[in-house]
Image (tube, rainbow over all chains, first blue to last red; front, side, top):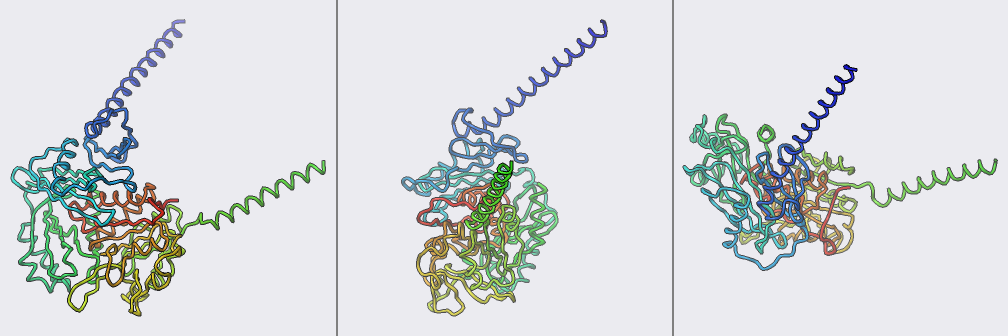
Length: 278
Length: 245
């Protein structure tokens, strides 16, 4: 009789504990779900009930409301917004490119982004029905150094949102000391340019017309070398070379898909590893 | 008893015959889809093949002969047509250039031997869509997407015409090209991501292209090298196009 009583007490105690645990974790899960949905509700000013969590993809969450798809990172920050019915959009009256700046800033503020030090490049891209305004926000730290963080806001020509994305880098990386000096990075790039038959012809022009700045990409400090060459064939193309500021290795050779240029598989693999490592 | 056996046998045979007929009907109405694709002369591996095969496409990568005549002759039977190659420009005597309207094609020796263009020209090495099929028609109506991954492939050339407009006027449901010059590395990445979104995520082609652009920006930051100039053309009776099974 005593054994039965003991058994019943333990069983009931165990069930009670399970119930408490389930209740606790349910509440915690609901609170987490609400936090995720709230980051979207702050952006779209719609009730939390109208927002659905679609799935978890890696560290990110994918959500939707009636008009847009959202990607939220592990810190519940908006990473990506994309309109659902892209192929069937009716455009209203066209606004000017100058008018787009305030609209872009408004969307980024709604995504809780601090807009302090940044440069903005706003332009019309595309052709015919595919035309959009693209606003590129490049963020800098208080010393004016490029942090590698950026945001894109894409608007239809009437100023309505097509989509946007925000990329965050650790701003302390931009301040770190590079093992490869600026001068060394320049030498690495020019040594390479001299090996390409087309670029070699324009070495003197490039020496008088290039930019070499530090930035951060996928958690790595890099040297970014940009130039254009005075040949109408390539006049629209900006040549870009990214050098790892710690190893001196190429991370990207951005060259046009035109005769005389080939992709460098070893550089592409190194870049892929960089993305995957992150 | 014998009658019941006979009835059972007749029913079984009928069911088997129905299955056989259905299989043939489905096969002839295009349940099996074909994609002709080539990384024409660029000699790099892409993940596109994996996405196509994964979605059930019979992916034909003709690496032995990617000459313009062979590429063009593969278009009518393709549900998806993809070519990744160099774009073209023409320089006139006065020094001005006209861009697009044609792409470079390579023969079995890897030489840039011929061009595939929208409009007919006097050049013997140029194989145009107009030259074979005229201005418009339904010869390419099997194509859900014609994808010209090359610099300037969406531009209208005063010499070669416009590849995107020509393919949709010949019946293709949609077609993709790039207005500006594009980077080799970034366009390769963009194309792979496009097919991932269009096939694995089953997205409409405009959404897949926009998601591919966002992926390229996430990977390369500001250095997307022209892939943002991606242009999509739809056939007159199409407002959307899908390529997944």
